[in-house]
Amino acid sequence: MAELPPLKVYYDGICPGCRRDRARYERWAGEAGDQVAWRDVTEHQATLREKGVDPQAALLSLHVEEEGGRITEGIDAYILLMRRVPPLKPLAWLIGLPGLKPALRWCYDRWVHRRLAREGRLP
Image (cartoon, rainbow, N blue to C red; front, side, top):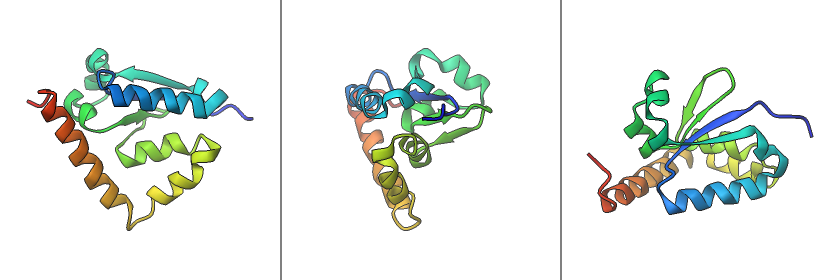
């Protein structure tokens, strides 16, 4: 398998579900997962600010940084990750469909907002 360009994934390392999702991704990705560096948002706030990303926004939505510094967030970030894992490629295609993507984004945003509110982590 050709080596993929590295990614940095800024995720909520305090969230147990997010940590489980990360572990699941690493398991499914196999060697492709070696090119993904996971960064806990709470530990990398200064780095995020330097890149023009508000750390609170990074808590509210997954952010992925590509090799050239381009940052993708939300459902598009998930698509970028899923495309690296052969069994997840069809799902990446599906969630990227124009009619489905906005609905998934809305559901995802509501879920994250509720989780952070329940945890007392919203300003």
